Image (cartoon, rainbow, N blue to C red; front, top):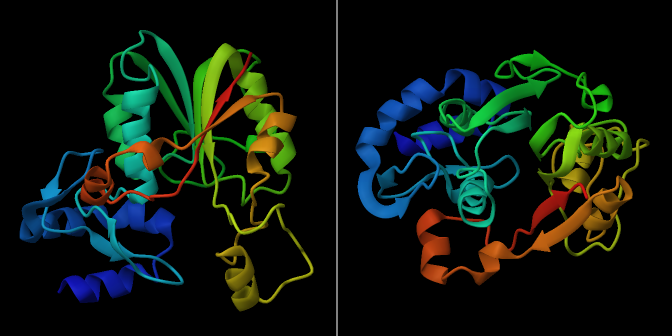
Length: 256
């Protein structure tokens, strides 16, 4: 049963996966109860996570209880251990393209004024084009924006808009797929074949693939960027238990 579900998940766009599949997957969680892996987003303890991936199905990727992937579990731990997200009072937070696994949890946190926004996500409460964020400058203490910059037409403008709406001393986490074998970000609109775009950009709806220069691109928007190798300093047994992306850099962006 699990193999059939995992196979079907490869063909469901993630926005629909988040919208419709959480109920049957949550039921399936019952059959995976155990203590081999643990999700730091929802605290589920399971025998294993489910495989998930478009080009290649990654083992131990998807938490069926909350739909968190490896990057989401890393984000949850980072927010708890490296930021004031859970401890500061009266944080105004903008979450762009919000992930299903976080929405209810963040909305339930009394220390946050939590706003979700996106141009097409059915999960977001504010319909918003990130190229023209409909909030005044210096509005938010925190911005979270994961796996968006590879999709937008003008990522420089999108990054600058996030910088604009942050308060002085506010911070953002802005993650994107990266190819660490490449020094520079690559985009080529002349490549139109979907299969070729999927091969080169990792998804056919990606407009670019960022390289090792991603942090410098964020700095061009005005941010002070810390490239945090947080996961690489964690004990290997915890990286395995939480099934984290073992080489992902977290981009902590501050407005000074």
